[in-house]
Image (cartoon, rainbow, N blue to C red):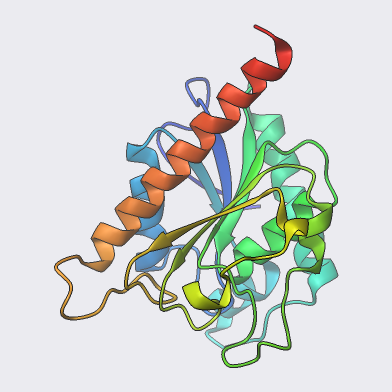
Amino acid sequence: MDLLKTKSFGAKSRAVLVLAHGAGAPTDSPFMEELAQALEVNGISTVRFEFPYMQKRREDGRKRPPDRQPRLLEYFSEVVDQVRLELNHDCPVLVGGKSMGGRMASVLASERSDLAGVVGFGYPFHPPGRLDKWRTDHFASLRCPMLVVQGTRDPFGKVEELDGYPETWDRVQVEWLEGGNHDFQPLARQKSSQSTLIADAARQARAFVDGLGRAQVSSTGV
């Protein structure tokens, strides 16, 4: 199992995010590289990996569709178990990912009770133009808090489409990146850049992790 870890992973990690790639791009894509670096700057260690279908694509160069969901979840869970084995101290472990990776992370968090949180970057709420195909039924079963950082122009879930989202999403927090698309690319007329929005997303993730820590202290009465 090949894991790509940021430098801070290990004894000094304050929080670890197991970060999954999207359906079409590998774990070392420019977006994933920049996101991992931005999270590292914000004090979040990341561990990246590739699902089996992407590993095969890397070996022979042939594009493949993602594995079926049970296999994706099985492998994701194995990665989380391996990360826990390698950590030598009590450290919050979160799961997350880009697009499909974030979706699988959230499904996993509805099945496992040992995760501190979920972070989805560009969550695929529905296929573009298919508002009858929402991929959120499991949100009501989440066992930990979830953050979604979403571009306001993301065709997989625009800001106006999520206005007043259901009360069953009580563990889901959505933060918006103004003008961003599914890859956090802003409009040409904006003064910001993709790098700016990725950095903003990482800061939102840091605030989310900090909030988890405060909630834990409050619940224990320390």
